[in-house]
Image (cartoon, rainbow, N blue to C red; front, side, top):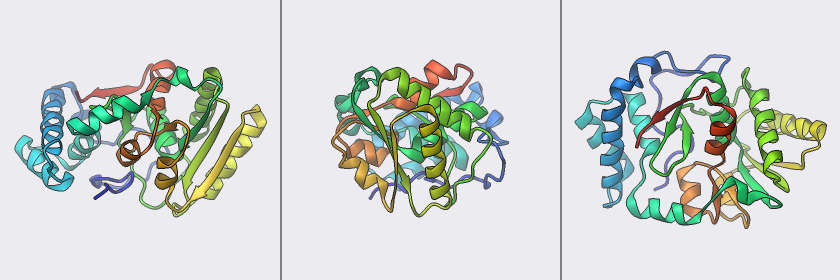
Length: 250
């Protein structure tokens, strides 16, 4: 059974802020004092997943064993990966530099919210597969925040520096305000001369998985079903957001 997209394990409280910044509890829950415990939990869950355990039961077992809070469990859930899946993802991974002259399929909310979080000082998780992931969640609605436009600009400039031929953005049509975000993406691209397309899809994951060219996503289901993929969020954050708060979970 595939994980629930984006939200995963629910956060302890809803995000009603105008920034994609840190959760009020993150300074305590993800302080360096907790790194060893969180890393052990990710290793344990990855081991269980590699031996056929279901996500839900494996996460409960690991979370209870290590005394993790709900938000810490979300971080572990997003960062773990079983052995076979990990090897397969690594085989199909391509570097951002390999995109020159090629089209790129972009998992829109997945990439944008991660970059927004990095710019806003939110927690960025470095997981088993090398991907950078955020801890933000979509609950049926996307709300533009102060980091949205800077994040779009940063993504566009990074893709331009890589020489990407065109970017094809895929957004979840059931998520409120997806149409407005699509309009903003196309407006910015037209203003800057970037070749972008943006599509609203009922289930963009299926389209990304079937895409014939590289995919920029850190969604586990997408990574396990697509062809070539690019760890774009990590490349961008390392190159352009040096102040990002990256939590090493491996």
